[in-house]
Amino acid sequence: MRILVLNGPNLNLLGKREPEVYGKTTLDEVESLLESRADELGVELEFEQTNHEGVIIDLLHEAMDDFDGVILNAGAYTHYSYAIRDAIAAIDIPVVEMHISDISRREEFRRISVLSDVCIHMVSGEGVSGYVTALDYLYCALKGEGETE
Image 1 (cartoon, rainbow, N blue to C red):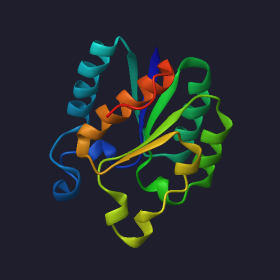
Image 2 (cartoon, rainbow, N blue to C red):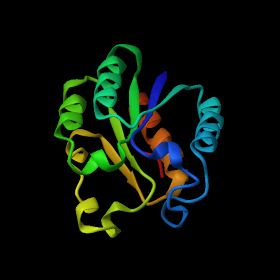
Image 3 (cartoon, rainbow, N blue to C red):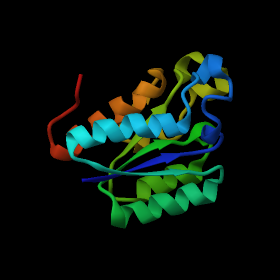
C-alpha cells in the first residue's frame, strides 16, 4: 500500500509559524512520526510539500497512477480552491482531509472547507497527531475495515 502525504502552503514553516495555533513540531518531525506508524502498518509513504496550488493539482493527478490514497493538508486552499476540489473529485483514489487546528473554531473564513464533500474523511483539531489518525483512517478504509477509534 502506497500513500501520498501532501502538504500545502506554509506547512514548511511548521514549528515556527504561529506555534500557539500549530504547535512547535516541524514538518520533518511530522514525517518521522508518520513513518514510524507506517512501518507498523507496512505502508509506504511519500511526502510532498508545496506552496503552489497548481503543483498540488499536478501531484493529485499523478497520485492516481502511483498511490492507493492521499492525506492532504491543503492549508488555506481548503477554504476556497475549487480547482483542488475538482482535482480530488477527478481522481479515483480516496483522499483524507487533514487540519492541525480545529477549523470549526477558527476565524469565520476558515470554518468552510470546499474540499470536505469530495474527501472520504476530515481530521481536524488533533494537532500534528492528527496525521497519524488520518493515516489510520485511510489504511482501514483501503483495507475495507471501516474507521478506527
